[in-house]
Image 1 (cartoon, rainbow, N blue to C red):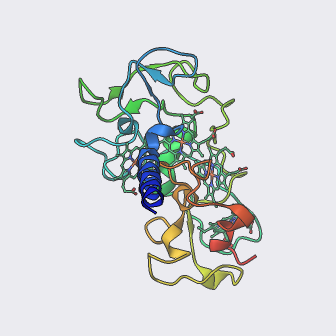
Image 2: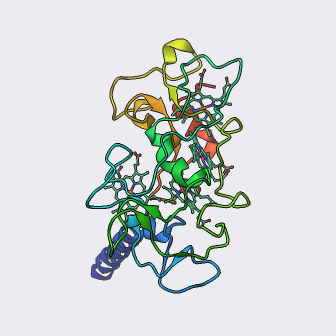
Length: 222
Ligand code: HEC
Ligand code: HEC
Ligand code: HEC
Ligand code: HEC
């Protein structure tokens, strides 16, 4: 009995250790590397969070303690279809712009508002990764490249309103329950509705498992 309890405690500690380690540094969103290698994104760097966040001089209008350069004036071709019923804004909202600031390929992944060390706006580290062009932007050949043409991507910039389309789950008005908890600022369908940039447990940084299309059915009824 005592051995069993010991084993249980040992495996519990192991599990906690594993859970505690699974963070952004174990994902493709860790771009740091001290030395050059063909797979290193930015060598001469040792910070992980700084590509997206800073503790000082953050761009609070864009995202939480946001550090990556964002071009709020960048035009995008939005998704369009005759069967759309909800209101779509002419450009994505911040819950998508912060992702697109890297994924549309127009801004270098290491272009920051507050570079560690010297501080101030500039670039951090030297581009080396295969998915990048010479100045550190995502290249169009990368699997992660989305581009500025969003017409072939799931619509974003949508104000979720199930009263406009009965094939959608009704809003609850409670940010803790579905579908509301997936909406950016409690209102919009954006990249962050389906993706969690810190956690790759479900691959492709999905916010939760999409087995049996469960994620789709949080909003769609069919
Ligand atoms: C590739 C970009 C990226 C990296 C790297 C990154 N984050 Fe984030 N983080 C985001 C985005 C985007 C959001 C906003 C998510 C949302 O609104 O759903 C966010 C939100 C947050 C928040 C607000 C609370 C939350 O979870 O929504 C905290 C705290 C945070 N990040 C901490 C960190 C820390 C600590 C690190 C480094 C260990 C880190 N992040 C690395 C992109 C990143
Ligand atoms: C600071 C730049 C940056 C930001 C901000 C950022 N990403 Fe990324 N992301 C990248 C890069 C670069 C890669 C490719 C990494 C690789 O290929 O190893 C990537 C990879 C990914 C992948 C995996 C693609 C694959 O090839 O498997 C997904 C999905 C993704 N990002 C979604 C998002 C979403 C959604 C957001 C916003 C919530 C976001 N990213 C914010 C730079 C960024
Ligand atoms: C409605 C949910 C949803 C929204 C909104 C969404 N994605 Fe995704 N995304 C997914 C799913 C699901 C996958 C996995 C697709 C697969 O495995 O084929 C994915 C895959 C990706 C990938 C990996 C490459 C690929 O094409 O499979 C990237 C990069 C990505 N998304 C970025 C984004 C960005 C940036 C936005 C916002 C402009 C966004 N996503 C909005 C659900 C979404
Ligand atoms: C956060 C809520 C949400 C999630 C999750 C979601 N969607 Fe959507 N989806 C929407 C909204 C809102 C629209 C726009 C509906 C409208 O305007 O009538 C839409 C539109 C679409 C359309 C285009 C419909 C048209 O009329 O052209 C397709 C197809 C679609 N979604 C498929 C998916 C798939 C597949 C998934 C799962 C990977 C998914 N959606 C996940 C909210 C969501």
